[in-house]
Length: 412
Image (cartoon, rainbow, N blue to C red; front, side, top):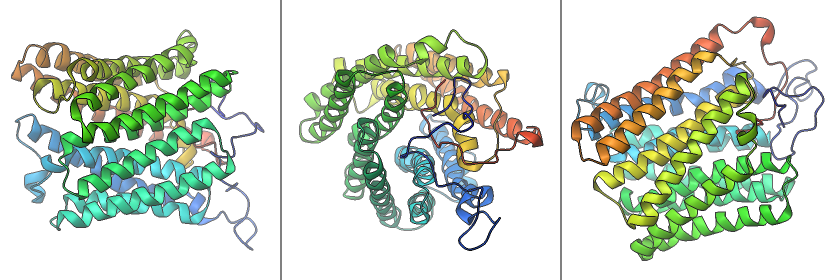
């Protein structure tokens, strides 16, 4: 695991489920040559489709806000708004998670998962039959489950099990979408995938804080309840969405009570930044859970917009911002130093989301929703720009020389 400053401790043992075989030694039979899979350029190729999916997904968001799109019409991609949800969740975030898991596994075949995931993201927006991209999405989730199977064999812990349950939800969402189930009905499945993946990562960290067996069992029970609620939401939407909302509230409550972020937010530098993003994200997760718990099957209108973006932006994007300085060096072997300016896009994300949900959605003000939505997009792109600037201006001496633990749950 990482130290309190979010940098790996020299010589510290890493979780067997999260550390790739050493890549700074030799390639098979070639002393002094790193295996290809440990090289920055090789791993970066898997991120390119995910980055494209992010840009096209944000462009699709403009169309869904009732504003002119910039990329879709120019590139002749007509169905971006139609595939916005799966593109962002399974295409963008799914590819990031698949690459991180492949690095953690450390075996060449594991990279098939992010490779197929990236191809699927491109295929569902390309002028091809939609079924082709949907089929690739299904294959990508199957490959991801095979990676988790191997990780579970190495470390049969509750934290890895929770993440594997999230992968099951991703496979369920991909199969159901390919089978013709509309995206609004799939949102509990997509949310379950993202929430359980992050929940499992944070659960693994909590184990270093002497987490009691009872708390670990409770976390696993909550994860099973969330996945079960997604299943119920298909068969009986009203109780299913309500149960999903209650399960999200339980996840938010567990994280708020057990996560180390509630203490490290009083620190400084990177630990405080990570903790602030985490705690803000947990609050948004509770907002989304409350909307479903009280409103039931909210699949359209302002309530749908509120719950969807409270979870997908307020929770998930906040988690990505929090852990980018840890995940990026671990996966790509290049430093992403913390900069105080990282607070600016994070603050803009949460402020604009508050404007969108608490004012625009709550009062049904279309103009406010559009302003909040555009500022959401600006916040995401601003963080990407700040992260890129931080990488490009990092001192050469700080380049990552070994393979760090590939974890989105590093200590803040």
